[in-house]
Image 1 (cartoon, rainbow, N blue to C red):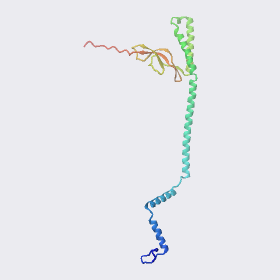
Image 2: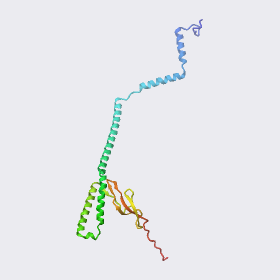
Image 3: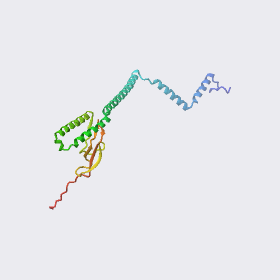
Image 4: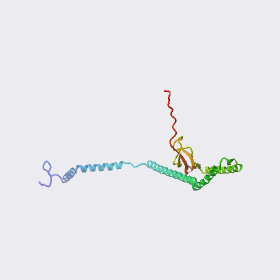
Length: 221
């Protein structure tokens, strides 16, 4: 009996093909559990990839249309923003291009007003002075009308609350009858151009508190 050839239970030698089959079965049994698990997972993934169907042509077309629509909306928004900025810059250039010239013309308006204020009341009754006064007033009125056509307007000052954004305080005036900070005198008129300050108004502001009401004591008690 040869030791190299395994025997069957009845003591006979096994055929060579059965011996080879037994060796292969033993090799498969020696495979580790981890290796078997990994192999099973790999086969499962491959099977899942094969089963996954690609997007249909209709779905791909819908996705492409949605992407193009989004890009178009963004381009339209950018174009609209650019148009608005261009219009704003054009409007600002139109409104404020004459700022320096307008500021210089304010001196002319100031001088006309000083000329009118310098004429005493008794002199205004003279016929010659009256005619001159009328001409100067018409000139001032025409100048202010021209200012208005170019969005140049007076800053409201006398009698209103002091606002550092539009007024420049030159001095304070003691007056307990009005609320502190009220403008009582305008030294030089202020002007706006298209909503932007062209020149602040030079003003005198009330100082002190508002006059308190007299308190009467009932002495009949």
